[in-house]
Length: 314
Ligand code: NAD
Ligand code: UDP
Image 1: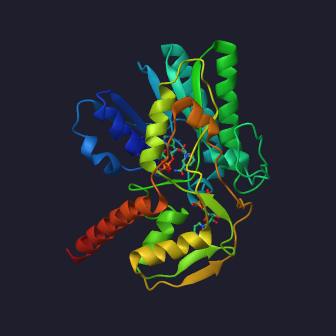
Image 2: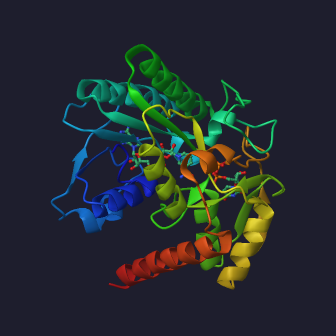
């Protein structure tokens, strides 16, 4: 797995090891950390190697999950050239590895390939509305080219590829300073700091708890070789960002106030997956409601903040 020390990757590593697989995790630790996979470090079925996916890697594998790429806007915009290279060269190197090993490969694509969508919900057949020269383009276009490479390797070399389009996912192991909306709001609420809504909060997102995503990823990997995708993996329950802020404040009993900040460039106004295909192909059932997932995520950040407070006191 590439990007296995990140938020999603750490959950997937854990699940795959629990299922008795041998997992080799490649990561450059740009946004990931060894802490996320601490409980696996002594497990003989797990190995972690510092490697940047823009460079080729050679080993023996039978399945590849390609997750390496910063996913939050502040991180992927920090060095946009590197972000595009990570997506494009990363998948190219992994497709080459798949070809050398006759391995199956899954690409972690994203709802961002739909850009600022003019259709809601988004079906896999929608080609998207992406600005190729904006501040989000390094991520969106990088991921789009990665999908193109997957399809080209499938068509030209019959490589067994699976493309999943992940919609906003959250849960424990998100980085506290990650900048994504759920981690920001929870940490701000727990510290009674201002809750920063970008724009007027009327933009929508549909939030999926990480356990549902992991289930979906494992199931898609197990589909017959004839299934390539792309396939949406997300929770179709749509909320405005203002509704999310209010829910987090209520659930944390916070004294935090909502403040409005400027909306970043090309911020999608709406996002909601059409999961008809996922239901049909893998019987996908993203059944964890926002409130239930938020409860677990709030508990995780409470634990992190209290650990930090103890370290400060020491
Ligand atoms: P994350 O930032 O927590 O994890 C990304 C991991 O990739 C980190 O461990 C990071 O260190 C590693 N990485 C980054 N660049 C690398 C490079 N050049 N070489 C090696 N490793 C590198 O993000 P995440 O939320 O866990 O996302 C994982 C994947 O899922 C990403 O590809 C992302 O685009 C995709 N995705 C996630 C979401 C979401 O809501 N979490 C939504 C859509 C798509
Ligand atoms: N957002 C916000 N305040 C924050 C962080 C994000 O209002 O502190 C908004 C952001 O502008 C976007 C939505 O929340 O409209 C989701 O942002 P995130 O970065 O989590 O995901 P993405 O935009 O990639 O879907």
